[in-house]
Length: 306
Image 1: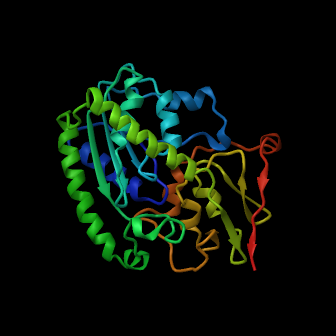
Image 2: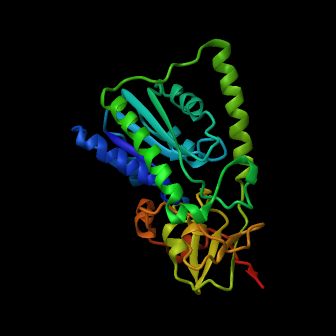
């Protein structure tokens, strides 16, 4: 089994790890593969081959972005060769507005002559800042989460859902009933609207840094797309490399120096307590940057808060 995953600040990576362990205990051979593009956005044959399923069963584990499957994940899935795959499942994490990612996945898979067999949703803490996302759309209390109160609640619910998912997947059971006719196209239209709005809203996140930045390089280390680089001890965002909107740079900054417009108060950051910066950085595909590579990109200089 190949388990494809993507995680910004640890929620989904924790779920993928636990699912892998649970399936392994049932005799499954699980290979995990991060759903991230090549560093710098440069695709090559080695990168494409690394995504080959080489299994008759694959799983997708990823977070919901504004009710939608993250754009870069949709792009990667559209390129996967699924000819030998007979069973496909997905586990998504969300913070209260799950959407219908099964509809989006079905649409992608139908073009490949495949179907989504099982689909599960797990509610966890949101990792984006309260002042950047409308507060009324979700419940968020990072101080409580960091103290473990939310974490205990989420942990119990996560384990319950993972137990259910493990049982279904092990039996290769089906939980998704494909929609037909008008119901199918109405669902596609609804999720197309959600997808369009999500992509438009996520075009550009206004990150910047203040004078608390120490140039430690953690933001570059955890950025899964390779958008953030550190030069002369300051983070820079490459304008021609797509942001995955995962908030890893924002949440893992040890001095809370990375901010977004509308959120300048330093009242905490969120990451899953079991997932460190070192762990989250392992999903990043690394290439050696040369001067020629860097010249292909325009650098967005950091703005400092005075």
